[in-house]
Image (cartoon, rainbow, N blue to C red):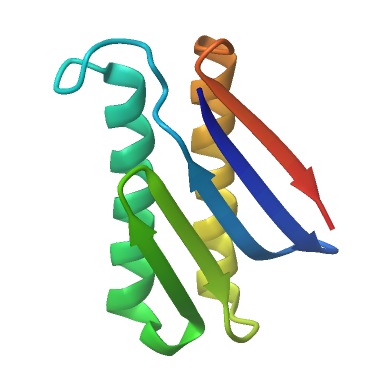
Amino acid sequence: MTTVNIKKNGSLITEIEVKGHSGFAVSGKDIVCAAISASTITTVNAILSLKKDTIKTETHDGYLRINTLKDCEITNKLLLNLEDMLKDIEKEYPKYLKINIGG
């Protein structure tokens, strides 16, 4: 199962941590993992192309952490959009993705 931990300060996302493999299918055929990866990578790339200095990322196999470095409306909107995309995936595949939201 993939776990996503989202930390917020009010309506601002301060951190998103994505860890683990979904286990929906074998590597290369796992549509849940592919959807999660595509959503997160697209969001990170969009932020880096628009507001490079607003986030810091850490990645390794089955792990991504996005930390916000400063308040930025564009960055927060993109991260809120990522949250919505991940929630949609969680609704369809609740056995393979769990989202936790906290402060």
